[in-house]
Amino acid sequence: MKANSVNELMRDTGAILCVECGKCASACPMTEIFQDFSYEVSPRGIVEKALFGFDLLTDVGIWFCLTCDVCTELCPAGVRFRDFVQGVRALAIEEGVTEHGVFCERCGEFVVPMHTVKYIQDMTRGQDSAGDYLRFCPSCRQYEFTAKLKEMRPGRRVLGA
Ligand code: SF4
Ligand code: SF4
Image (cartoon, rainbow, N blue to C red; front, top):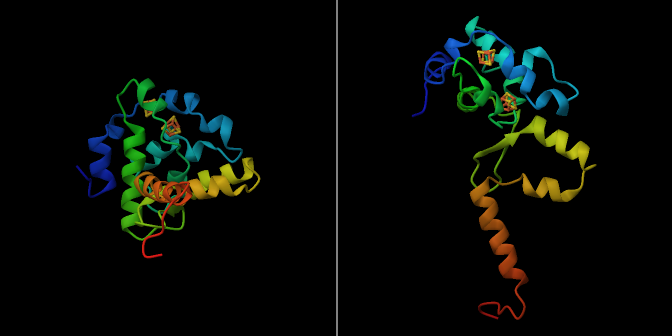
């Protein structure tokens, strides 16, 4: 069920039970992937800010997580950080914070954080294939690619021609 506030999300995902052990941050793949990774954007850092009542909806740190869920598996307190950060992102988008996300060109659904896209573009040196893949949400991507495949079908007859 969708949460209406960060406090509700903290209860629903167990973030309120965090014992600040740091296991999540030490296992998080962001530490090896992002050069601009810091404690402030780590799962522990984000949960700590939530516990201290900082405004997470305008915090750029919520857009770093790769949603791999490794931290959830390791957390001794049962905090479901991935669910927490995805819920916070949804609330932020509802509040009009859209500059940190990429949204599907077809249906408008949130696809992926801009931070992740910039990283992929840097790694692929701006090759178009990466950009194409991320312009649509998974179901619209399937629709677009199926339409493209149909266009490529040998002997395709164009209706009305
Ligand atoms: S692993 Fe769990 S309890 Fe430990 S800091 Fe991370 S969220 Fe908190
Ligand atoms: S879900 Fe996010 S915060 Fe947790 S380990 Fe994966 S990238 Fe790190």
